[in-house]
Length: 239
Image 1 (cartoon, rainbow, N blue to C red):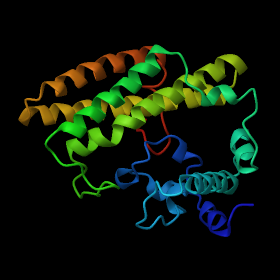
Image 2: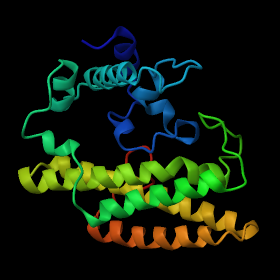
Image 3: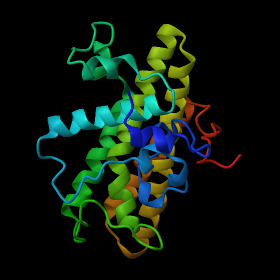
Image 4: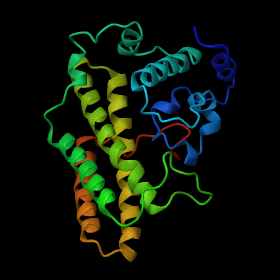
């Protein structure tokens, strides 16, 4: 049963069910937080280190996600229910949690490693964690920092959901694949624009190298998931 606060907030007719499954999770700059159940009911994480006792944090996150599904009358994924019940993923689902042999997935991972090496060795100091909210939007450096891992993870999710859709014919898996690819493309576009701005004042040749890799990654994701660009996410994309 969903907690009372979830049910109270979920009664708001302006909410968009499941919008939190279609975003890039950068709530500070999201235009639809007033229509997002996950944002309105987000737990107070305080000032602690989220990496401390990671198992407990992950379990709390799964409980939180299930409460969002319950409050909006949506069916939680079976794997989520199994994990909350202390069960191991079923043999049929185990493939979702192992590396996949896919060139596009490796390209996404390579981008994350390129940017990690660049950020770790550039002169600009890393900003605080979590990133500060700025009145006029994040800095180009913060954009590159924020998206370099989500690009890879969303590409991975797009691929695995696509494999599930091909195997089962699931319309939801196909939608999840396309929306994950769309979020990856958004991260690629914003990162590329941010790197362009950074390159105006920084002659570091790695900036252009990363941009060339992003350009190829954009082409490959767009070709693999042609419906991603035109997919409209309610509350997040203009028709």
